[in-house]
Structures are given as C-alpha cells and as structure tokens.
Length: 271
Image (cartoon, rainbow, N blue to C red; front, top):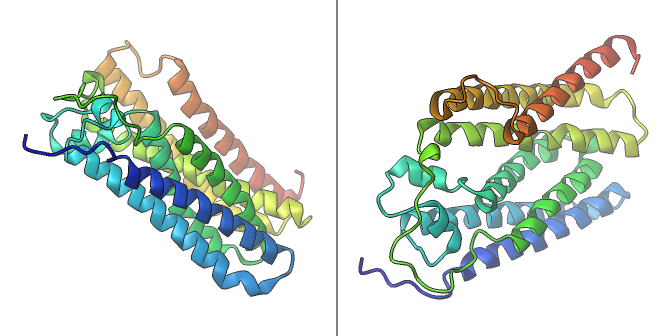
C-alpha cells in the first residue's frame, strides 16, 4: 500500500525492552535493600516496578501495532503474518513464534508481580527480589532475541501464519498456558522468600491459591492443546508425546505434586 516503512521501525520496541530491563533491575535492587531492613526505598521500589510494567505493556502494544500495520520490514512480523490474515489470526501471530511468546510471557509476569506486591506481606520484599530475577531472565532473552529485529530489505508481503496455526484454538490456547507458566513464578518466589527467612510453614497459606490457579491454567492449556492437536493435526489421538506437549505436561504434573505437598504439609507437617 502507500505505507512508508522506515528502516528504524524497530527502535521504539527495542528501546522499551531496554527500559524494561533497567527498571526491572532497579526494582529488584530497591526491594533487596528493603528486604535487608531499609524501609525508605518503598516508594522507589514500587515506582520502578510500575515503570517496568508500563515499558513491557508498551513494547507489547507496539508489536501489535507493527502486526496490524503490516510492517514487513520487521522480521518477526514478516515471518508470522501477511496482509490477508483476518483480525484474530493477526492477533495470535503475536505469539506465533518464540520472540513474541517471550514478550507475552514477560507481560503476564509483569501483571502477576502485583499479587506479590499487594499480598506478599512479610514475604513481599524477598519474593520480589526473586521475582525480578525471573523477569531478568526473560529480558536477557528479549535483548538477544528481539521480536523487533529488522529484515535486510523490505519485502512486499509477509510469509504468513503457518496454516496449522490458523485455528480458533491458536487464539485461546497459548495465552491460557502461558498464564499458567507465568503464574508458576509466584509460588516459586514465595517459597524462595520463605527459605531465605527460614519460615517453613507460614507461607503455605499464602501460596496455596496461586499454586491452585497455576495447576488449573496448565490443566486447561493441556486439555485445549490436546483437543487442538487431535482436531487440526489429525495425529490419531489427543496426545502424541511430542516435545511441545511434554514440555507443557511436566509443569502441570509438577504443579499437581506441589498442591498435594502443600495439603500434606498443612495437615501433618510431614514435608
């Protein structure tokens, strides 16, 4: 069309990821100083975390904008979409590949961090130090594997979304399973904070609802994924034991084991 594609269209996205990186480190440092007993950093810690969340949300919004404006100068947009894709498939092209999926995961992480900030009580500061280091992992990935990388030239059309992914389940299934993956960091952060504080039983109550939601979302994601594979790929069964399926099954399995463990520990202190 008459769009002008600019050879620096990646700059806003990469800048936002870089800002998210910086603000996440600041948040981690301020929560660490608070965990060590210096309460005066409360407002800075929260503001840094808000800024990290805003950067992540804006980076995601910018990637959506690049998809919906068919900016094929961006490699990720070129690889996973074309100008004929309908609205919902353009939406799901965001998580069509690795780079966008990491950004989606990080955005969910950013939202769920508020569960710890506002419900963490005595575990909050240490849990946020741990949680910020989980976020750091994704930010390191995204600086090395940016969804905003440019093509060497400007193609007239995108490569399109894999026909197997052009399915209503593609719109619903990945966000559900990634909410589960992302939510799993909350029990982890609480558990690590409890270990650091040598508090072996008080945290159980705090963690139980989030562990339950994690297990539920992962179950939902696995069931939808199995059905989708059966319907679309025609593998002759709901489960093919392929690496993608197993890598979503094992976290669910682990989350169920955790739930049982929490119940037993609460009831008898056996674990």
